[in-house]
Image 1 (cartoon, rainbow, N blue to C red):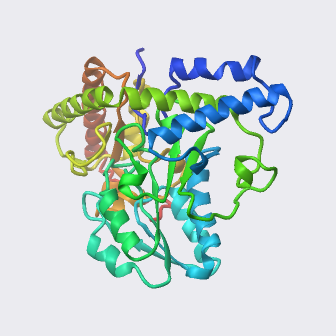
Image 2 (tube, rainbow, N blue to C red; image 1 turned 90 degrees about the vertical axis):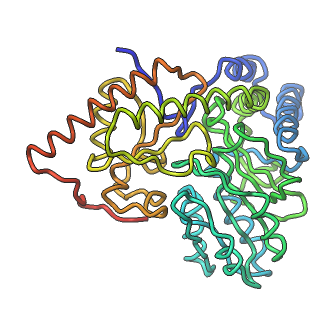
Image 3 (tube, rainbow, N blue to C red; image 1 turned 180 degrees about the horizontal axis):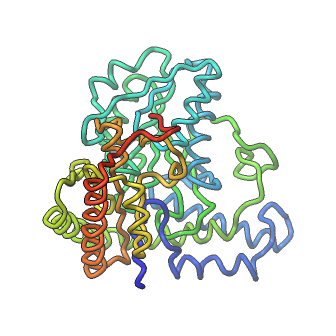
Amino acid sequence: MEKIYLDNAATTPLGAEALNAMMPAFNEVYGNTSSIHSFGRMASDLVDQSRDKIAESINAKSNEIYFTSSGSEANTWAIIGLASANRLHGNHIITTKIEHQSTLNACKYLEQNGYEVTYLNVDKNGFIRFTELLSAIKSNTILVSIIAANNEIGTIQNLKAIAQTVHEKGAIFHTDAVQLYGNMDIDVQDIGIDAMTISAHKIYGPKGVGCLYLNNKYRIDNLIFGGNQERGKRGGTTNTAGILGFAKASEIAIRDMRANNHKLRLLSEYFISQLTATVENIVINANIRQKLPNIISVTFTGVDGESLLTKLDMAGIAVSTGSACTSNSLTVSHVMTAIGLNNDDARSTIRFSLGKNNSYEELDIVVSNVKRCVDELRAYSSTYGMKTRKRKGDKNV
């Protein structure tokens, strides 16, 4: 049975070039980057070169790049570290209701420790309302964190306009660009981004490595203590192999970005047209012209999303019901409810996320199987009078 992978928003397969770039760190350049002998210096030099590459890709300085273990760590560090370092200037944070769980949970932690957090609403396509952002900013607002491109519906926010609004009010602007990086040009200086999160495994790099960009003019408190790694701001032995793979994946993603985007847009348009023509009673979430081309969120009215996912998996097709970081939770997707879906429709939603390795032939197979599985589930529901219902443990986030 042919297996088809359409969950690239959760993670991409590791590219061959990125894997090859990592190999020296496993069997040749294995020294600890903190060691002062030649083995350590050799590894440190390679990490510095990787830092230079990633900094160049976003028009940042090399000493503004801090490597982390993941995008989640970078988000958590940005939110808590910047809030803590700037506590004397205020205790108010602004974010949105469609952020990644790492951002939302960091904000909840701050709320439990004396901070005030405002969660902005979004419209049906996932966009913030600038009037609401403006009215939310107060004299004690120190940080605004807004996701660049949503991981469930792909909506791309107007980062430059947001940054300008935030800066006019004297606050710091952080964005989670994990899904956006490698899919769109990001110039942190031109846009006005003060802090930004990216991750390797969304761009065909290795898991276990990400980074936080932080403009040098801002202070940040440590989240992880230890040695003097990352200029004393993040303790822990440097993941040399992961960083080398990250840099190579970044180089390839930037090099091939336009070609990949063109392919993904054509694949996405084809998939949506075939799906809507073949399967009845479905809704495509988000504005298809203002979102990432590879993320397609589809609500299959009256069909339980987990059942559909399971049937597709049995057919060799990998999709998701939302963020991989919450896939084992019984909670209804906070993103789906934030854009106005009721609980039943939120549970009837599947995320298809395409990758550069997918083909039209694969999408034809997927559409055919989706129709078969949806028809079977709807027929079963009709025959036995079963409806999607609230499960024990279900709750909104």
